[in-house]
Amino acid sequence: MKTAACAAMTLGCAMFVIGCSEATKQKASDAKKKAGEAASSAVDDASKKAGNGLSEAKDKAQEAMDALGKEFTEATGKAKSALEGVNGGPELLQNITDLFASAQKSLQGVTNSETAQAAKTQLGELSGKVEGLSKQLEGLPEEAKTAVSGLIEKGIAQLKALSDKVMAIPGVGETIKPQLDALMEKLAALKG
Image 1 (tube, rainbow, N blue to C red):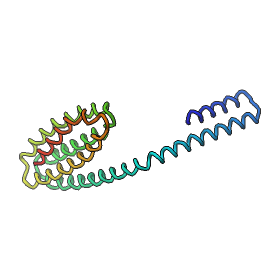
Image 2 (image 1 turned 90 degrees about the vertical axis):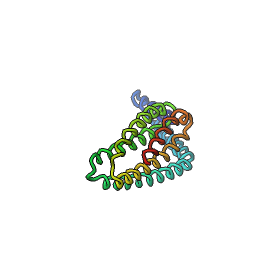
Image 3 (image 1 turned 180 degrees about the vertical axis):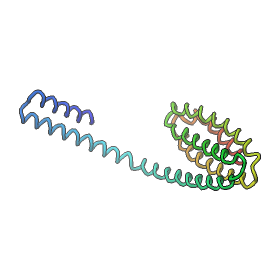
Image 4 (image 1 turned 135 degrees about the vertical axis):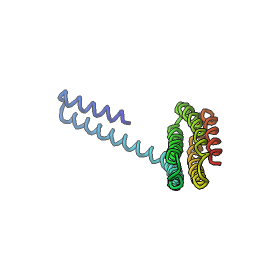
């Protein structure tokens, strides 16, 4: 449809330049206008038909992700308070939040089997980082361990919701499932 609108506009411009009669110019202008309206109407109709169900599903998924994000933010605040004054606490908190942000970004970037390949590598790298976090957690006071465990639990829930959505994409599951499962297992072990 856009092609028709562009062709009509091009035709209208060409006629003007060549010096066609006013009646011909008006016909071209009218054709251009009708083509643009038809294209716009077709796009609107298609968007409405396809978008109604999809929009509702996306809205519900976004609401769930927002709720999980809020819980993660609250857990981050609790962990921050518990880690104040703890040697290496701020760095540990930063490392944990960075890990979850990276995992989330990797999964959000998956739209097909090609992008799943990139996520596969990133998820594998993140699994290695979890092992380093485990060593950092060992020396924490009990209160700090509990708060960090709560943060990790909320992060896992957030990643689980996102991974379920990504795994439903055709051609993606078989590509990233091993790395995703390994990461989730290591995070669950880290949580304790």
